Structures are given as C-alpha cells and as structure tokens.
Amino acid sequence: MTKPDALTPLGALCRYAGFERIHRDPPVVVTMDHRAVLVAAWAARRQGLFGAEPPLLVRFDAHPDMGERPRPWAWEHARMTDLDSALAIANGQRSDDGGWAISAMQFGLCRDVATFFVHDYHRFPGDDGAYDDHLGTEHHLYTFGGIREMRNSRAADAVAGAIATRPVWFDIDLDFATRRGEDDSVRIWSEEDWALEFDDDALAFVAQVAERAALVTVATEPWFCGGLGACGAIAEGLKAAMAPVTRMFEGL
View (tube, rainbow, N blue to C red):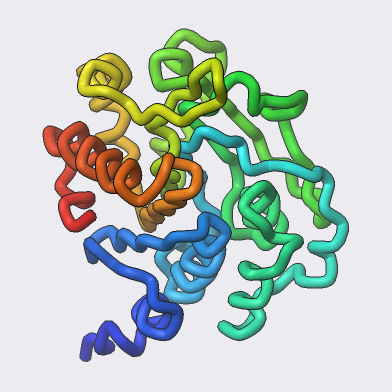
C-alpha cells in the first residue's frame, strides 16, 4: 500500500514548514530563504530519494554560497536526526544563505557541487577545486559563469560523468537570472539574455539534469532579485526557457 503523501518525510515537511511543492516526480519544492533547502534535502534523504550515496548538487545561482570554509562547527551536528533539529540548523545564523552549500556537504546531503551563472565578483579561491569535510570526505567543486563556460572548460567531462552516474539534487536560486549595473542596481534578464544563455546545447544539458533529478529546490529570494515583481518576472522567464525540455516549473 502506498503511503499517503502527507505522511512521507518530504510531504510532512512541506505541510509543517509551509513549503510549496509544485511538481511531484521529481519533487520540486519552493522556499523563500535559500538556506531552507537544506531541510528539503534532509527530508528527501530520509525518504530514500537519493539512494545509498549523496547526490551531485547542480545549482543555478548568482552566488557560490560556500562562504566561511572550513566550518568546524558542523562537527556538532554531523547528523540531522529529526525535523526539529533540521529546522533549527537551517534557520541558524551558522547555516545562513552565504554558506548553506558547505553545510550540505558537511551533513552528507550532497557530494560534489557544480554551480552555474555565478557572477565573477562573487568568486573566490577554492570555488574550483576540492573541499574536505570534517569526516575527511573530498567534495569536488565546479563554478561557472554559465553553461557555455562549462562546455569550454576542462571540467566538462567530469561534470557530465557525475550527472550520468549519480542522482542529482537540482537547486535554483532565482537571482541567477540577474545582472548588476555600474551603480550596483539589480537588472533581471531580458528575453535576449534568456535566449543567449539557454541555447539548444544548454537546454540539452538541462534536460540531462532534469532526467537525473531526485529532488529539485527553488529559492525565490526576492531581496536578491530586485523585489517581488522582479522575482515573478524571473519565474516566468524560467518557465518559458525550460518548457522545451521540462514542465516541472510550470507551477511557479
């Protein structure tokens, strides 16, 4: 007998924490604060969606979210064993939006991390390389300005190989589709930007990621997108851009 969805870890979390789920297979969970996706991944792991090994984390984000390395405080919470502790960790200052990806590695919620659309001025040494967590597990880190940049890099085969052989946690921060002006103002992508960034080859890559996705998380983060209106416009752009390869974002 199939367990009612509200009684699964992910279903219970969405109801308890107020997360919105807009697609079921794979589950697509929408949060406002980016740090909250940690808890969605925790529930997905408890539900067995990732299988025996931590997934590859593929991210679309303007920021690496890998600040303050290493994070020895994670030793105190090497295992998230219940929902209350998971929520407390996700909401704590030490798991803030600037470092949640490091927390995900420390908690065993992902193995390697490939982040796309990071603004150059947010990169720092170590974004491309490896990170050893407190248990000694090595995590490979890949950071790209876009999918085209990945295709032209030496890391292309490694990322493709990881996608082909591991489950994927696909994470999107809507601020990935922004630019910054000289006055530091936020400008969301135009139609031309969307067409440029998601050409046929890029969409083929997205299709592979979507096919392997065991979990998809979306952080709306309006404060980094230029407000709620801008956030909504980016969501519409994402739906239109992804429509040729996946319908999982239609509910945004």
